[in-house]
Image 1 (cartoon, rainbow, N blue to C red):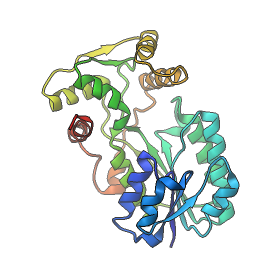
Image 2: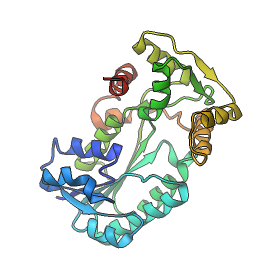
Image 3: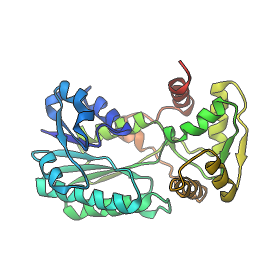
Length: 289
């Protein structure tokens, strides 16, 4: 049986591949990457590296040929681009006769007001339409998304947010990667939806947990969207990124990620890595060596 992971050289994809290789032989695993040069290390280990570009559907026909079980990792980019790219991938999977699709979606996607939800709503619908058995991995929020704020706290800055009392189910990318790998190679996941979430925390609770890890108090600065926009500009974020980060704060404030679930335990047999341990890992990774 041949498994394939798209986006295999990305941050999440590379973790999924490494997790799979602990169980699968390299011959059982294929990866689809836009730039195959970035996957030379995997090719050297015997992984079947295929060139596949979500913007060029003809490359996906070759990339997905002979694949039984497929993990589509959601692409980067604006919503319109992602909807088009994901549609290309799903259509190619159908043409290739893929028997199972796992897809990395977003928390509560079909009901979500989150800025990032539309591509996931469209992709889930496109997969269902194919009648190919599926599993939707509705990932809540990567703790790694907060590295900028964690880095700032390490350097003595306050934790700045406009997310108010909105709660988030943060978990490490490694937890999400292990869940994706488990579903791809496991049995009994046909036509399932998993809401993958860590324990729900506010910004204050996350900053407090980080403070305990660092052994100091992290002051939280709750601001309005206008002030948050100005702060992000001051940090040098590109203009096109600022509405996205502000919109994400707004959608968190409105409860879009407040999805309580124990699905990590269903998929992995364990909950997400405890937040204190997860924060320690990130602090260790980003601290000067």
